[in-house]
Image (cartoon, rainbow, N blue to C red; front, side, top):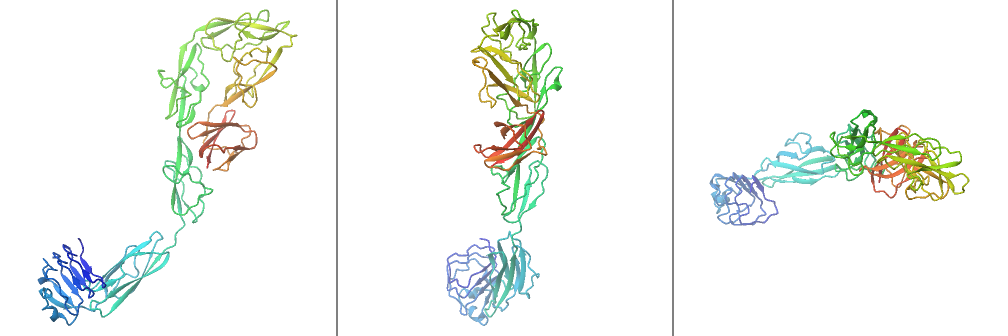
Length: 567
């Protein structure tokens, strides 16, 4: 046990056997008059004792070994004044070196606190002190030692709870001889709780200034930080990004730090390994997202064989399954073209020139031939016109001849097929007999978009299958388009706005009329597509999980990204 001074409390009556045995560092001991029994070897081997004070007017009868191993013959015994002679002949007590009277000194030798600084500086003659501590200090310890530390009794030290405002404490020193006491007054002022400070840890982005917020108030949403190669994905209360901070409803009750979350963006480049490398632009893709398949490049005299992850074209890139995890370059693979002739037999109509098409290439749909008597009804693979040739899907595998089919102009079974390209290049209408297949034309083109098929309705609910679907009446087929993800800008256009943000069930987009919208989650998966038709468009979003969503808006070659958080 390590202790240097022991003052036993005034109410203690019994000190047990071996109670302080082996307190090697004990140098002073103060035993009050309330003690009536001291056990065997209570202070044995406390050989560092240099003073012992007792308060009995008559020596207490004790066992002979309570100071076993202690050199009492070198230690003074401090006793009540006038009792020195009695103690000098009493058993056990007579073994001490000399006998000194208890003093009447009530002064402190030192006074201090665990937090703050006492004012004025401590002096034994000053009995009133004050100190101020910040709101964060909830407890304070008071330390005091008496001038006569061996025998004086000091009360009021130790650990104390603090309330906000004024806290008063007293340290009382009782004279060793019990003749008087002295009280030292300590006033501790605990400050009011300051307004909380909100700090922003951008985790690699540019610095955001801290905010001082009224207790219970709301944080003002700062401008989104920037970080090269990333999209900002919101502020979180924890560095692990598990709890999103809601600037509308969350309030500040203490100092907090908000942590930025980031979604990695990587650059995907296309090396065509030919004469037109500049024709395919780079794409910015979310980490774990998919590359949008670009339009196939063209190199005269060669056939394009896909995109690969290395210039030697060993590992093909699968646009449906491969995801982006770093900056990536894809390399075009080419094979020398095998050329076949495609001839057109108009069977009495106007002449159509032959075409030279590479192996695996598509025949370009020529202008419809003209017949003086009949109506053109499509191109077929046989002279008896059984199987229609679909220019938009069939590829050349050898020398072929396509045969014109002619319809009787007076027949009531002739139906008209109109192709509405929805802003794409023109596709000529067709005439077919009721119950026949519609001839699939070459795909139309539209700058900034990728053709996504023909549908029998303008809402794109029913895709038209040129192999199995039959025309039974006049029909309009509608082209569907997907925007090409080019030139993504991190900042919203000045006249576009998404609100409320965060949102719960519905979100509004203004200033984006005429744009196509793809809504993506942070994994890069498109969860919804939409065409903006109003200056203030409302989108219901109730069935999707909470989190950050990216709203990609496209119109022609223009593209904008907006970010919104669903609660």
